[in-house]
Image 1 (cartoon, one colour):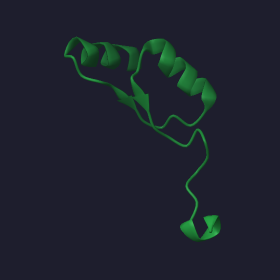
Image 2 (spheres, rainbow, N blue to C red; image 1 turned 135 degrees about the horizontal axis):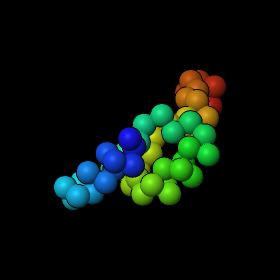
Image 3 (cartoon, rainbow, N blue to C red; image 1 turned 90 degrees about the horizontal axis):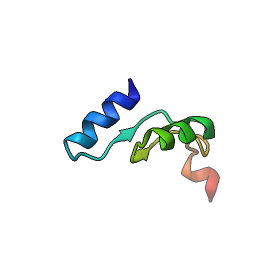
Length: 53
């Protein structure tokens, strides 16, 4: 389904974005499909600003 939606977007000259990319394996699969962008917690979950400082 992701591949079909990606192909439809590209046919319409639209960049595609995949959500919930939470692991390197998923990101690799999205790259193979040709998805333009991905967003998710693959690098880690958000942390509070106070914990960074």
